[in-house]
Length: 343
Image (tube, rainbow, N blue to C red):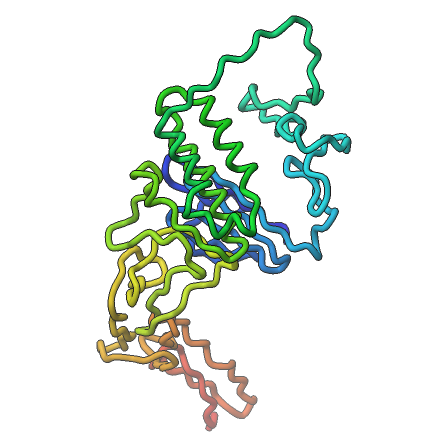
């Protein structure tokens, strides 16, 4: 498989490219399957049982199959089933140094001169005495967001998952904020905590506790669901079709219960699938599998209720004997030749 895919956030939308061509999920081709929840785009590579997802908050998740990638990865995220903090030269550092070792994996982009790899030691020498840091006075609104991780919404999850490192990350980010600037970044931290729980099949409804800070607006007619196990259902050939499974439950915008998309690429939810049929040459209804001839073409009604037509093949050539005479007629789609007696 030589295909390449790119996922990136552009404003409040996620752009997708396959071999440098912009595509719109849902899309399936060249060994890659793209799905979208509106809030997140998921890229599945089914052949190697792996996936990549990115949300509008730039939350990036890479899921790899152990049988293919155990001790067989390198980069900013470390070694699959191995050390987390590994420099580009292979040096393994303590888990507390990941923020620095990751800098050695920065991709050098000539168009972005500030994007250059750095190889910094885990312990920087103190050349001059540093003053004691001033105590952190976190924004009260942000502090309440971080407290959600210790609250009742995550209580069941905390019995099985250690969320302390995410709680510490939230507090650290909070101390770097000025006033309310960056509050929505804390939503990304909370979303990460919810994903950790989701990996243990524990769904956490947490957005309603953020007083609107982490709300996500869906297209008209759709509702936000925190835990959904498959993509949107849709109509095809007048029938309801179940969306592709996600693997792990995902957050995003979906049609309300008992509703589905008007078609696979639509953003309109409907209660019932519209009756569809193909139209024949005189406008008569045709069903999937029906075939007919029209204007020198052989036409078929496909399963997606679209008409596909191919030119009729020319008749096989006719070779007359010396005692015969070729008679050509221009009637029909092609000139027809028959052999007649020469006398």
